[in-house]
Image (cartoon, rainbow, N blue to C red; front, side, top):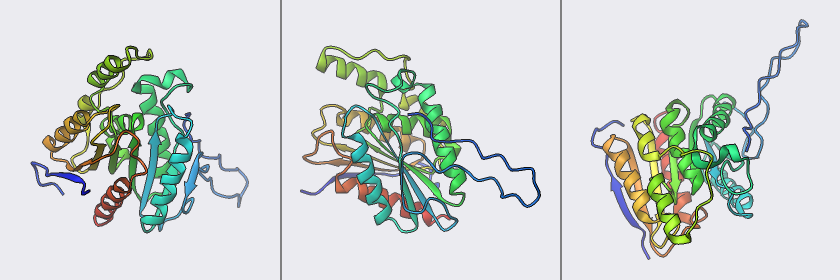
Length: 265
């Protein structure tokens, strides 16, 4: 069955814990080696560093499923194989049950921790375009990071995003009858979208049958991006539910976005 696609064109034509560790201190002795950045924690697929890398894809998901780390790694490995001159990193989850409670709720601390991780990648791959693929709770964090620290990210791919946070929480509460307490009200991606750079490129994907993060939440965010003049590839994947990250459409959207960014280098 073909994918239901809506190409949203911009109004303006304008083309966990953090793994970011400090720089090693340079030794004082003459002839000592130059300081190096620590290798990223988590799983890196492709070269660990190098000026020849044109695209770095960071995969950020939530920790609500025990299978999340394996899904992250499989998708990151697929990205590194599919995109030329790329590296991919499966970041540790920054939201979800059983993780650091100060990172819950999609609040400012989680965004800061994610930002430190992305900043470390930008330092390690100084010539690369940075793309963050966020899945579920990770998509909300990726969207907020793009709005709060827009200098860090060149592209976002949001999958099954709870991108209208207060409305999504009300939806979950109406379905389950209870919602785990968050440590903060959280940052609503629809509100932080105002800070996103108009040069950013975005892809937003959601399963047509997603009952956890229904289509309306992704559609609202895609429309908000378009109103800001941001090139947005919005797709509804027929017959798919909430578990969408490993669907071929997500990898294809990531490839398209990376190709568009590398043409700007």
